Image 1 (tube, one colour):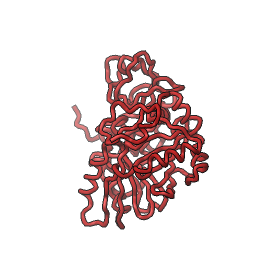
Image 2 (cartoon, helix red, strand yellow; image 1 turned 90 degrees about the vertical axis):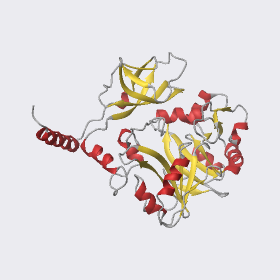
Image 3 (cartoon, helix red, strand yellow; image 1 turned 135 degrees about the vertical axis):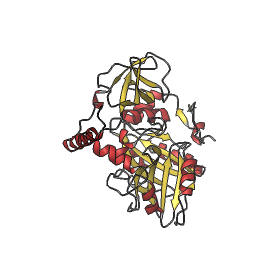
Image 4 (cartoon, helix red, strand yellow; image 1 turned 180 degrees about the vertical axis):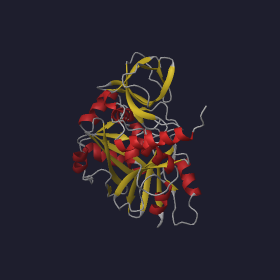
Amino acid sequence: MSSTLLSRPGAVAVEDPADAAVAVAAHYGEPLREQRLLAEGAGLVDRSDRDVLAVPGADRLSWLHSLTSQHLDRLGDATGSEALVLSPQGHVEHHLVLAELDGTTWADVEPGTGAALHAFLEKMRFLLRVEPQLLTAQWAVLSLVGPRALDVLGAAGLPAPAEEYAVAALPDGGFVRRMRPIGDGTALVVDLVVPRESVDAVADRVLAAGARLAGIQAYEALRVEARRPRLGRDSDHRTIPNELEWLTSAVHLDKGCYRGQETVARVHNLGRPPRRLVLLHLDGVSEDLAEPGAPVLAGAREVGRVGTVVRHHELGVVALALVKQSVAQDAALTVGGSVAAIDPDDAVAELDDTRAAARDRIRAVRSATMPRA
């Protein structure tokens, strides 16, 4: 189905919606102007292609705590978080953006991944008092983005959460949840999760308060600038949390046992992950942007994979990429025929003394136990 906001003037649908059940607008006729709107003002972005789940039930928080990478058993009412579901080997299978409100834990996830996550949750219910539900057909995610986002909410008579991950109920159903900013760090993000039949009414209310419509392309450009990964685009089947910024936003390093924890803890404590997420600057010679999964090459050698590639209103053509830790900061790289360079802010992090010592001890043990020639 298509979002009702696709009927608004100038709307151009996303060409490749992948597995999304809902089609949304890529832009409303002026992609670069819409990026500047999110960076400098306030834009309403239709993200109703995201899947939405709800988990009511008395055991929901302790249950989700045991299944995910996040510390959730004491998640307070009217607060949110992020969490991952990992494979037994520590690879990322699902990324959840959470909100706890009035006895229900809500999660919105990447388009097309909700059914698989729901099936996993159903399989793990056992005799616990939880009732996971897939509600994409009933609920939609909109995002108000920009430095003026909170002003617009106030003018619209809607709650404006003061802190990141704070959640507040909307008067006509649903909730608002403040997320971390994107872009250069000044573009605030407030998600509005609303009944799907209310999307037009909520949009009209926010637009009347001073926001303007912006397409998902504008949101993606600022997301890439902020180095915020998306599951399935900027990750692959081998990705572990340590390779992405999810290690700080969606993983609690001091919580108890969960599936995949051993890998996360070992890599965190004993050394660098095999790859790191970087921002690549591309020369933009090619008119066609590389697709997620395209190889990053150093000469003829493959040293990584590209994720989301965008045309940014200030940075030009940029991309998120997972590259090997061994790739030098000044390495000469190519992606799909375009020359690429790693952003100076994404230099390889130095090991602190504790981790360096731990890694040296592991190397010493391995050396002592290896058979001699």
